[in-house]
Length: 147
Image 1 (tube, rainbow, N blue to C red):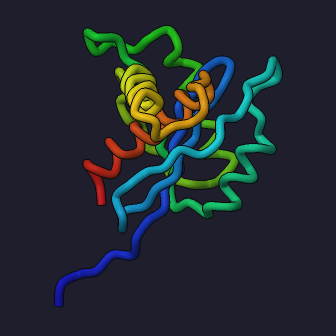
Image 2: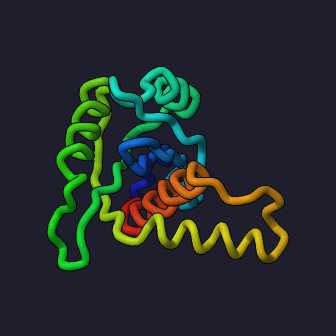
Image 3: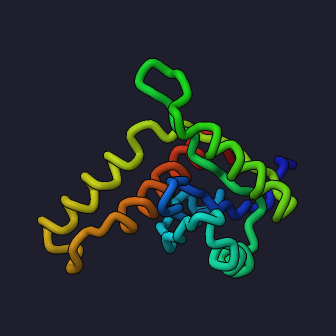
């Protein structure tokens, strides 16, 4: 008998110093969908908002986009992203995986502008929309590489 695995739910994060985009997906459908964007304040991320999303989706694992420069070196934001990923792991006691996020925000902005131009998106594109769409792109990449 072939081994069957239980589908896993994942939440992804596109970390920024002002906002964190979030997305959810699973290994059954292999698709990700943008969720909300949460604020980052002087004291850190809006953990209450993140807590709500974690409770609502009951993920099996978390995926954090890791920023790299074109040459593959970590960006100046990498230490803050690593600290955020470590905080996620400690707070939720879940596996946290890293995914290269190069160009995810650029791709997200392009997709959203195309949707707006095609009329499939009624609302103007806001920065928070780009962040959560980037999180979905990060998660789509992870889902394509994992099952």
